[in-house]
Length: 529
Image 1: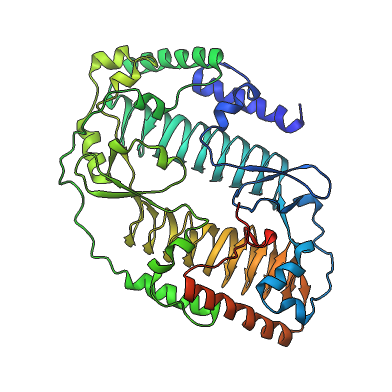
Image 2 (image 1 turned 45 degrees about the vertical axis):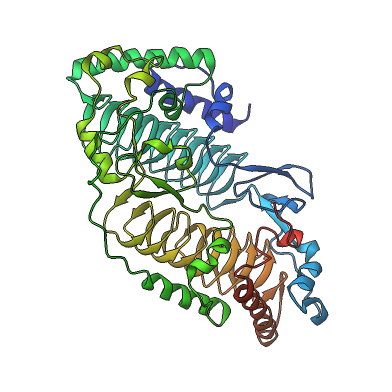
């Protein structure tokens, strides 16, 4: 066993003692259970060494060349292409085929003891993790930041000692919690805010010592909790897994929520023109002239590699709802979805009986909680305004059809933008502006089709690049400018070629509302994954 896995085994057993009161199984024994229902990561072979290469984004075309991040020679020099090799995008991609190689096992910043993971920064003791940062002691987790001692979690942030958490934020010592914020010591619960010591509870705020939404005296709650923890530990030791919250709910009978159909908040007077103006400005900066006709004409193209929102209906009112197609939101039972207002009303009024709380077990939980298990899919925190068809927003404004939006303004068709503005068709961009179709990137400005890059500006079609300026169609290089196909050109020559290539992109997009090439398929000359 490696040093990384030895340390994680110790941390896993410590987390189990906190959550279950014992050490029911080893980390390796539970890996299939822990990695189920996380975001996918893909496995490849390095074309240089044959070593295993892990990629967190999985959209790359089949047949592309791969290399491990530690095999990249960022200082390698390349000869400029001839004018005949850059007549158009097709000839350019043919000319750089030997330079086009995707990279996996990507780790940035001060990191150590990273295995079977990619797209990480400033993290330590990590195994089987994709797209996380500033974390330590994680195994089999995807998408998150600032976490510690978490196992089998998906889409969590600023959390500690959590197992099988989904969209858990700023929470501690939680198991099988979904969409919880500022919570501690909770089990098998959904939609909790500022709660502690809750089990099998739904859509509550500022509550303690609840079982099935029923608030109990401390002694009674602790007795039930200890009994349930022992049952979980026994079953986990025997089966190497425990049922998910959704599996338990799915086994129950259909029910109607205890919320009236008129509890949705008064509809805001939205102004989509603000987002459309941002789209026109951003496309003008990227292509030299705007893409006309509106965002919706280009939505299929923009959503090609993002997590587009899904349409749903409230179980209480039948009103339309939107939910992300990632982080397991898409797995929620469609007949049990509520708006936030409906869910809070339901949570205040729905609870199991004292008799049911005292007799609740893993074996009968599906029967006991069937009447209270409903799922709020709207999550708004802080000051938000003019966010149209956006399901989850933190301190954001003027956004349209984003899946998750954090501290972002004037954007559309994005998944998980943070601290950004004027973004369109992106997935997991941080601190970026005026960019289109950028993925798993940080600090991008006026960029297009950028993947796994940091601190780039005025650039197009880059993969695994850092601190690049005025560059196009580059793989695995850093600290350069006026590059095409990894080779630096004179500024005047670069500008002339750029105008020609960008003009081709604008013409194709204007005519077809789509572009054949993207950063995920150019290494295969347009083949899809």
